Image (cartoon, rainbow, N blue to C red):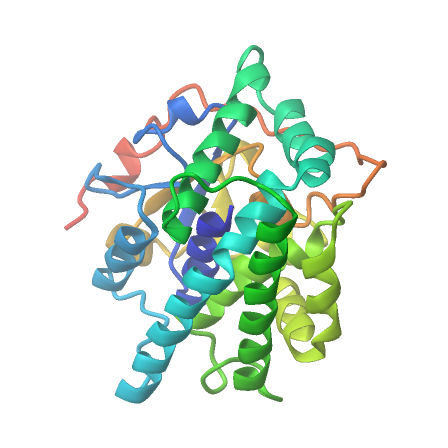
Length: 306
């Protein structure tokens, strides 16, 4: 979830023209995993770091104006979040029993095709548990009250440090968002937007006014809640039938990639304003149709690309 939010926010900040292609079956992704970026050279990238490197090579760099010190600070805060915040996010959405059963599993299961909806959410949960064990360096780690307290304590410490660093500024470094802003937003926005039965992290985040405003401002600026028309000003949604006509032809020839995301990906729905998760009240969602062929719309658009 966080990886997708980070990659999409970074692309928005850098002004990269992407087609967003939504699918309900991760196995239909060109890489077999989601999110995935398919370049105009028919290369498929799944790791967020590879996606960001590719965008930078194409001159879409959200960190272009950062000084050496700011770049070092950015890496330090990202490392801090990976160590202190990421484990708590995994626990909150995938391990905490009520959150997982009432929201995460139910939401994914309702928006995956049969029969994947019966077993993929459970498989995704097991993968997240393994990821948590790797992050914590404990192969025998199990969910429990003590673990929850420890993870939440670390997450609160991390959010407090981020709040102190942001201060009264709109973004972490100057007047333009950077990769750190994308990383922070990608991790905090799902906490802010989801109304989970166990919302301890959200409660603390909402107590930090500057971080809450930071997320809200980015949502309003880059992911308008008033629908996909506004959202598509920078990112074309393939299942809507758009061909990215709003991107100038010269620029379209310079670079065009497709970010493939799960149609049932919670972070996509949150960031585009399609849904605000409500405990015990699930809004009707518009389910985007599956793609018949992920790469079918690339061939003619990418011809002549240098």
